[in-house]
Length: 298
Image 1 (cartoon, one colour):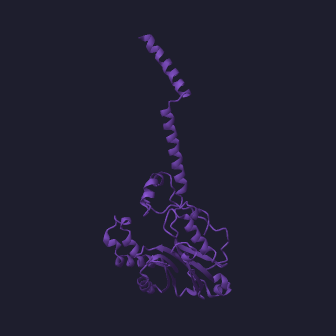
Image 2: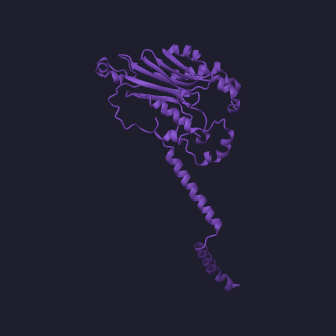
Image 3: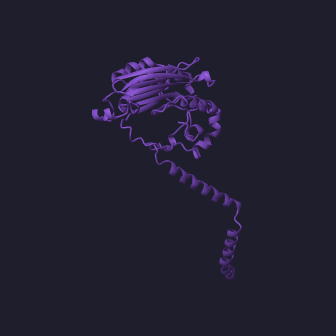
């Protein structure tokens, strides 16, 4: 027994050495999963630098009426997908543009869209979906931002919004979608800050790209009016072209399987832009890392 006890450490050492040279497949799999997990954690830490103020990053959800597609890929969204867009800063020097504008874009969820797709909102209490309640909250939210220009999508109660926003000095323009759709896009601007010089609509149906629409509005900033409080002298020395801008408002097709149509709709609106400053607002119906988002179409 003593001899066996003395030889046991040597046998264990020999066995451990043998295992190091020839690892069991189970241990290899465990090490592979551990390394994969470490890489995934490291990747997430790098992409959450500009994350929203939220205590739970896992609370991000994907509303998708194409339920079968969502179920097949849900495990990938939970573990590997990056939900945080990275900021892309312009390479152009904008220091010569002294004016500043607060711009807000918001898909407000049209009443008809909400009623036609109850499966997307079944967890929300019905009183929270009532338009009379929601329109007041939308107005309160917009009032808080103190914006100069608002772009709304999925609008089917334009008159209600127009009546509310007039209290804050806004004027508005609306373009309904073509076909049987009940909603459209709306642009509002503060009358004391901007003058509407030109308005143009893009009907994508005429290009064979479904019934979505876009608005293009050319604005001129009024003299002595700026959200940065430009002085009269500064306004006089600013070039007229620099005090004009194009605002595009677009609601791109909602269909995760038709990226070709989305891209076509985006290209059509880009080709109509001129050489003055441009702001594009809208619901692009695109995930953060899809081609439409990362290819710098806008």
